[in-house]
Image (cartoon, rainbow, N blue to C red):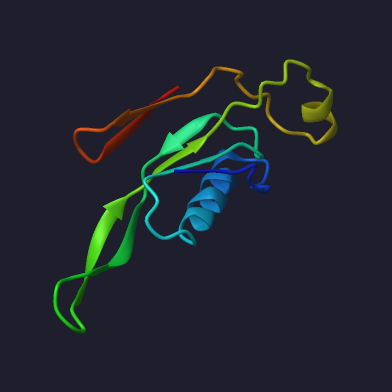
Length: 110
């Protein structure tokens, strides 16, 4: 799991999703990526390709892996910042991330 402040993503939700999904591809082995900078409360589950080492010399394979991408709520209840940047108001609903230790699985609830 990686938790980071994040970076800008634009005024629309699509820009925020694209920016965070691009950022999570730079960290090998992630199950969950959490950021918050763009003030959009959402979760996506993009798939990435990664190399997996097998037993034996020079043995690798490419596997597909889902990563839970969560953008946390801004927790700001005032509108001044949003209005000055001409952004859409954001929900302050809290995100919950559920991890299952018995199997390789993570989900998010908004």
